[in-house]
Length: 429
Image 1 (tube, rainbow, N blue to C red):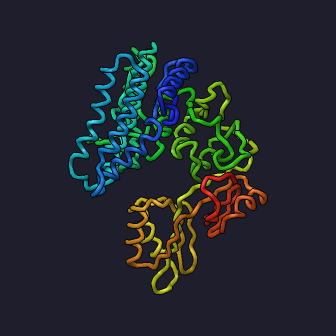
Image 2: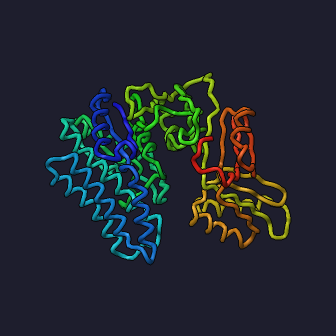
């Protein structure tokens, strides 16, 4: 049994769907679970629908109708007989319409998950129907029937015991009659049948959940790059493809912010020793990158840039030392507002953290912290992480940036840097 995951970029248009179907027909060697994300840019569009619903002066139906039209155009190009697929697509979108006709839910994250999750439901219905027209013996599966989570909306935690039981039972039943299952990435459901999401880009994690639960022989993630690269090719000219990588190195990369794989993806397959191949849907014949229990691999410097970072310097109001009781308060508030710390440092009179600048979370955290601490906040910063660094690469990457916060551990250096305003975001370094 195999698990293949395709991201939204692979199905951004009708030709993308045709290419994915061709890959499945060509490279599937046995019964397979296909995990698919929402069509390219759909998640961003649905996020805008949510934001517009909460905004007093914006009509969320404008963004929704534009998104629906894009899906209809792709359906027109893929299908001759469209009635059945259009009915199913409209049934999915009407769930959003019902929500945005009412007043916004008091819990923003709850509404976010109910609306944004529709992108995956729609894309997978299109793919399953199109696979069927191309002669593939396929069944569509609602992943919410098998992946059970808690109710931490937007960052749901999986109930592994119940999820494994459900996945094994359901897939065994389906594979008795079908060769391919198409299901959604990124989403799950609570015991009350509310939809949750597993974190942005969480479709990789979904594929890993299925791989773990089904003890598959291998897992493939199909990307728009030839494999794992030493840096973002949009930022750097001289990146190299890494042919083999250990589970540990992949975990380190994703923990530090590399976007090629979702951070939670590796550990489940490592526990079962399931190899993962990162492959290109643009050049599917390529060798890609194999991730497994590799040892003694010589890696080039691996560079990860994360933009939109925030630096908070938290100091006691009476300039006393920052002690354990202060740290207890600080960490409890960080957990309460679900702020993700990227770096932290304790000095005698301050505690410094860097985090992704998610405005509604950061500002609530700052508001609560300000009751007991003085807060100095800096925004529009970058987090630069270099694995397997050397002096030359550090100097080259920081020559146009001011270093504000530096931390070194063996094999890794991290720096919060302030970019030169004359250096364009995304320009080649």
